Image (cartoon, rainbow over all chains, first blue to last red):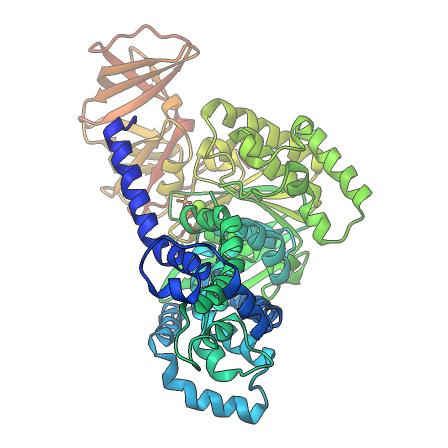
Amino acid sequence: MQDSLLQRVTTAITGWAVALLLFFPIGWMVLTSFKTEGDAVKSSLAFTPTLASYGEVLARADYLSFALNSVVVSVGGTVLALLFAIPAAYSMAFHPTARTRGTLLWMLSTKMLPPVGVLVPIYLLFRTAGLLDSRIGLVLIYALMNLPIVVWMLFTFYKEVPNDILEAGRMDGARVFSEVWHLLLPLTMPGVASTGLLSLILCWNEAFWSLNLTSAGAAPLTTFIASFSSPEGLFFAKLSAASTMAVAPILVFGWFSQRQLVRGLTFGAVK
Amino acid sequence: MATLTLRDLRKNYGPMEVIKGVSLDVADRELVVFVGPSGCGKSTLLRMIAGLEAITAGELQIDGQRVNELGPADRGLAMVFQSYALYPHMTVRQNMGFALRLARVPRAERDRKVDEAARILQLEPYLDRRPKDLSGGQRQRVAIGRAIVRQPRVFLFDEPLSNLDAALRGQMRIELSRLHEELNATMIYVTHDQVEAMTLADKIVVLQAGRVEQVGSPLDLYHRPENLFVAGFIGSPQMNMLPATVQEAGPSGLAVALASGTRIVAPVAAGSANQGDSVTLGIRPEGLRLDPDGPIGGEVRLAERLGGLTLLHVTIEDGRQVTVQIEGSDLTRPHETVRLSVNPVACHVFDQSGRAFTHLLKHSLAA
Ligand SMILES: Nc1ncnc2c1ncn2[C@@H]1O[C@H](COP(=O)(O)OP(=O)(O)OP(=O)(O)O)[C@@H](O)[C@H]1O
Ligand SMILES: [Mg+2]
């Protein structure tokens, strides 16, 4: 059906309005990062751009080591979560038992508990196990944190794969591993990829656990931002510069993978 | 290649029993067809043989070996699904070669076998396409090709032709027959289409509600049905079923009277029949003839002229409808009154529980 011009214009205007609204804080942050501290507290748009804040931020902290930690713990946490979630979701989607639905709901319910509720036990566990301020510790906690969502998403993608195809594979001689590796994963690749991307983004932006469980050695970029907010009061320009540098990689990454994300999240895994 | 033995196989879904004790022997190179109405358990039985459904009770043997506990991957059977179940992300060549790839067959040999199967099924031009770029008939052939390539012990088919149009179905039926000859394979074929069953089978197994009603060659089942269900299920157009009463049991057969009083002698052993018992008289449509001196009178309601065959739907004196099948193009018109005579060979009598009385005449084609 052909939409009328008016309809298309309205849709376009609404779309852009929502997009601008969502983008405004990020845009403002990026703008502020190019101001001097003096300009930053004024609410005027007229200023002369300067890279001074970036210079100061880079001089004061080792951006690259924070960024590397972010990459390692995000990728590690996502890979570990997928490693457990793929077989779990397979078993729940294709060999369900009477308790499968209940298990899924229970897993999701763990996300309703505020993380701070388990901070003390986790902290003590980590201290005893020597995992404080270690990348492995963060990888573990990130994987656990995202596991429910990752299992749920994979489960819904797997549900769309016709059982017949996997049964045909079994008749062809595939055992569980071949069935998942040669049939299920390729068939649900868009879904698995978007699940992985979402998990990556969630890990990258995670601040609660990284602030509480790391200090210097394993601290990711969220800690890097935080280190510019507390000690000497607020310096908006430097804080904005640090934040911009922290979110830039994931924004760029998100931009390049958005097609994949949208495809996986809206069209389902298998036509 | 392989024999198959089913010993009192049973399947329960929770408290509900859907396969209620099926025993059957499938000989080497035999093509056995499971046929029956929808929901009777054909697919379930086939999937139990395949290993896709667990067997609740009973024993399944392949070549004399118990296989109940083996998974589908270890039974060495191939299955063609009703939905084809092709791997959408693989080309036709990869689809057909998947089983060999899993079995770590070297690439050259794999390609040779796939090419061979593609030749038999005339799929050579499509080897590099994906399933979504094929027609229904071509997909069907790929699914069959995927089974052939593995040289399985037994082929299992679950209504493989039901998604094809009538013309293609007829053509594929002939191809499957040819394939059975060419491959010398043991095959089990599930269908609810009795024409498919009749034309393909060495042996037909008629199932109803999880039980075997009768096992036999197609002509056996057609000419010597053991009960009302099989008599009504096999044959198209359906057998005419008329309520009747036993008049007299003699050495040459059972004399029965229709509701209108017409007396017909059916050549069946009287068994335990007594005078006055209610029975059902079954007459195949080709067992009724137009005959001016015939014992049954009636009025033609509808004439279906198929060219080589004519089907007359006649309302007989007791108010029942019967179908009369006449060879050639008959010109009898609707509303004409006609008289019919009965060919005793095509007559069957069933007692009240639906069991057939034994025929006295040996049919030349039935066992
Ligand atoms: N997973 C299941 N749980 C419970 N009942 C089932 C299940 N699968 C099948 N059934 C029941 O078992 C019976 C046999 O089903 P089956 O699919 O074997 O029938 P069918 O003969 O193949 O029929 P059709 O010709 O329609 O394919 C049906 O009554 C069906 O409802
Ligand atoms: Mg079925």
